[in-house]
Length: 368
Image (cartoon, rainbow, N blue to C red):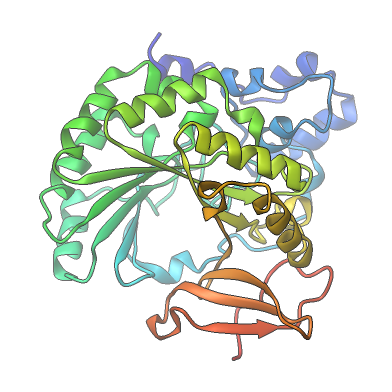
């Protein structure tokens, strides 16, 4: 069965959960209320990873609406993506990088998604005109890399991926091209059932280095199938890196996070970012971990790693840039550094702030 046919078997309605998860009537209604606001879709594969007897199973928390997230505090655009949009589907926040929203679809709609304003919905934020994107890049010679994201970039058809690569790999100014995808974890069949995809990646990877930025968040996501999907990408010459979101009751224990990092490096996936969960509407009160606690978790997990596992940065993808959490000073103030910044003058800037014990994010306006 091809991947498109498999995707049609996704679990999209609360009725499909009732028997498998033993939901009460109240739970059914809460889940339905939330999924009416933010769509639910879970691949049969990812659903199979849930321990049905554990209501706190981390796979369940990441994929099945809890009903608790109907508390709508938070924002839908926490990183200022609308203000960074230069033409339909193209964002240019950082000097050297453009982000292309290629689709609003995913194989599984993560409950912690920071783009839930568009994922699973019809959206006018998706790039349709490849020629217009290429023209914009050519007009800005400082751009040296492109990130194809979404939604999930691997939910494009292979033919559409080929169209993007056919154009982008001809641009001499680009050093590399990245794909943002969570399919190795949530739907490895996208990669394993479509040999044409890896053939396309291998062919165009000979013209321009390709990276896949994937999104393992818990050791349970590292399975025989996800390992095989990663290996298929690596065999095609793609470099696979990972970014993890720190989440309450998912991976907010040092030993869990340490196990994840260790298992990733063992299969050749390079850990890159540990992101602070963003204050997204319907996510903020459910998944965010306070910054002080998050820093300690990150430090304790890194202490259990070898050299490669220590490569992650605990980072906020803030409206002003990517802000690394460095530690605390002698006065108990938290130290931060701009790893990337919308205002390029701030790149590398170190600053400190008093952080309250329950504080989970930084203000939009940061004073130095």
